[in-house]
Length: 340
Image 1: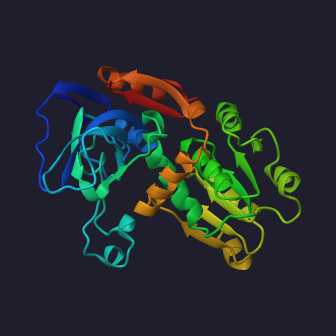
Image 2: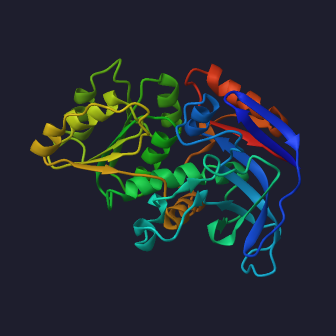
């Protein structure tokens, strides 16, 4: 089978290797779509602090069941599926208390363990979810980042009737905004410095958008939400400027969810967090219920995903997909590698 291996930063080779053998309680998936995310690009540039080389990437994937081990029930060849790319210990405090997604020894497939950038991938059945036929393979490959978004929104509790400000209109920010809207938010305002990303957000139904370089964000918040401002702010960029905006512009007693991954440690005004009794909450990855909720939202047709797919590449052009993202200078959302 074909497999793409990143042997060092910026170096990806596609070669032939043996198809995985099934172990007990495993499913063999014929991989069909692989999405490339920002963290993958960090690895490509040698900037991911927890990834060593060589590494097989691929964690945003969809596929078709090719085979199952004899002890697996509920799946059969031909089923469309996705999987959760988490390896957990099951023994630490978070794992023992239902928080396995923040396991003390968490390994993410495609980063600390080899991923699914190959024609066939074997994985434990308890990480696999079957998909309804209403969800196509492109949409299915976006269930992983959508689950990040759904988990982040759920960290705030119910958003029904709430006014939500989303900082950042990249893939995660877009999906956070769409998820909040689909889960009952009364109004969503999304921001970005990229007019391209704001336009894609509009095509996805997030019609209230603002570029803080062009327009005053504080005034936009008052215009869209009124004097009570946002009930919830979700930071999806991971830079000092946006977390600063979140804290400075938050209404007293409101909640900020931090989803963005910070490469550089930010300096933030914790005095305002204390003085305004802000709820500052972190959000990492997802649990199985977030996957199930994401699948349900897709199945109900509550999301617009096609405008987010910027370009598709064949598997043999795996490296070209990374190069395209690098040279696009931010004018991309989701680039996919397709195996057909």
